[in-house]
Image (cartoon, rainbow, N blue to C red; front, side, top):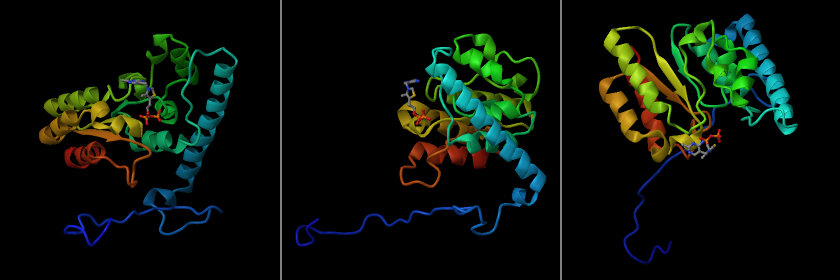
Length: 223
Ligand SMILES: Cc1ncc(C[n+]2csc(CCOP(=O)(O)OP(=O)(O)O)c2C)c(N)n1
């Protein structure tokens, strides 16, 4: 930029915030969230994360040795599925992307079912019991499950049912072409109890308008 040429004016001013709960040594960095006061729940959540990591390692090994057709690893992302699993109530509806296994396990999906599905057998997502009975299969197509979530949310609203639907997706899916800005606008306008959550964009510079709208729809539409 050459300040001697043209009329220069500042058009944006912003800050990037980073929230840290624990430091690298596991010590609290500040005030802990309320749920963290319950040591029993924290242990259960940690157990789910550890179990999911063990599962993931095994699934990757099976895929690498040709025993599983394809597989999307959740390595390093176990906390996202765990948080989703604990945030949802049994009666809520989960519409997952393909890395939130912890949430599915928490909602009663057997591990072998997920492997079956990745092996190409759709019966893997035909659950027989548990809160996941009314959930959707995990979505490999990027972002195409979001319109479904908005539709389900609208149905819940029309029926007057005090439940929410949550769809998860990767940050790539939050690009307008993938996620569908119009779906989110529809959700906001109709105030459906729909939430779309994306793991990596939270608080990052790359947060795009669609994601912001998605979180708007969650906050605005909670019944
Ligand atoms: C509709 C559709 N287009 C393209 C693809 C191919 N594809 C598979 S993974 C991927 C990237 C997804 O990135 P992101 O949403 O950030 O999720 P990540 O896999 O990184 O967790 C793409 C484009 C797809 N699965 N579905």
